[in-house]
Length: 196
Image 1 (tube, helix red, strand yellow):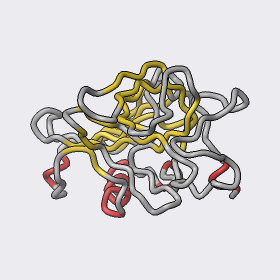
Image 2: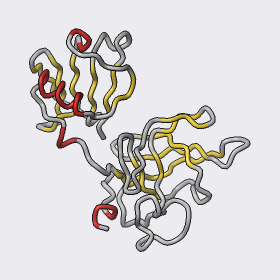
Image 3: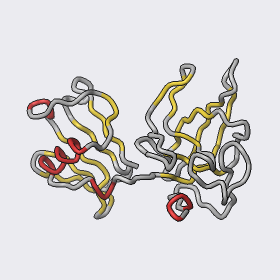
Image 4: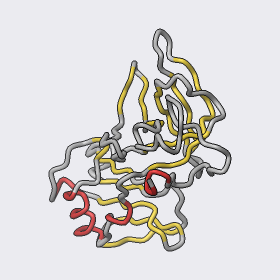
C-alpha cells in the first residue's frame, strides 16, 4: 500500500513515502533515506522538500509531480507501486454501530499487522467476515476515488466494496458489501475486478 505524507513542521520538512511497514536495511541515496525489505523498497524519506518544491501538507495522492520529485531526488520510479484498482482482501475483526446512525466503525485486518479503521453503511457488515477493501488512493471500477474522510467524527481509512461498485454483480449476488468465502486470503490482492 502506497502512502504519501508531508507535514513541514512535524516531520522536519520531509516528504514520506511508505510502501511497506517492514524494513531491514536503510540506505542513503542522494541525501534521501530509503528503507528496504530485502531488495524491495519499503519507504523513502526526502528531506528539505520545501527548499525546491511547493507541496500542500497532509496525505497526498501519487500525482505526476510527486512521481517526478521522487525520481529527481531519490532516483526511484514510483510508477510500479501505483495501482489503478488497489483492492485488498480484508477481514473485519471488530464492528461497532455508530450511535444515532446506520453506520458502523470497523477494524479491518488487511495483513502484515495492518489494521484499518473503516466506516461502513452497509446493512450486512459484521464481525468475522472477509471483505473487499478499496485502499486510499484507489480509483474503483465505478469511477469513485477513495480518499481519507471523516463521517460523524470517525476517520475512515478506505472503503468496503459492494458488487455494484466493482461492476461484479454477475459474480457476487445480493445487496450490501461483498462477503468473500474462505478461499480468499486476508492481505492478498482482490483480482476478480481485474478479470471481469
